Image 1: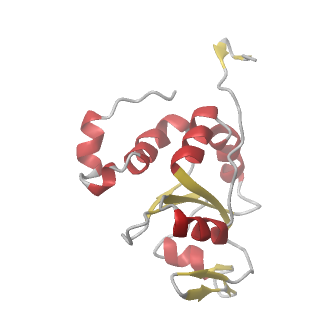
Image 2: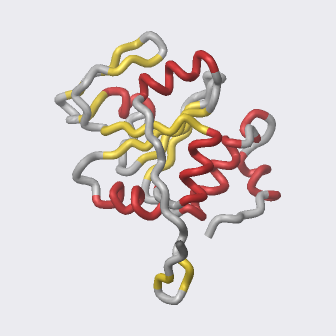
Length: 164
């Protein structure tokens, strides 16, 4: 069904099927893929807007499901999380889980997208709200494997946007 919003066709909505960080790690063993992690908090307004406007967009959700292991991680999680043989716990001093601190090099903002490649490169992170069109080049850079052979700058020069 097509809906009109302000005289324009609204994007179709579908939900991303989020995995836990442990589920993504388990899947990496049999099929290496890039992990895309949405770091959020329950109180974050822009996290909720991004859920609705970006992650529920059909093009974004379908692309994430087909190319990535999409993970949602509450930065304020008190659960212990393991990654690469190290355990990360809730840090009462910062009131966040140390995994969120580690993956963002201590530069936490909400929402934050962290991209973890299966070849042990340093995680890439993007802070702040992103519309589908803003996220498209980044997702396709990693999803198509261009990060293995060229810089994002080179990729961006030839990139043709499709999402609106």
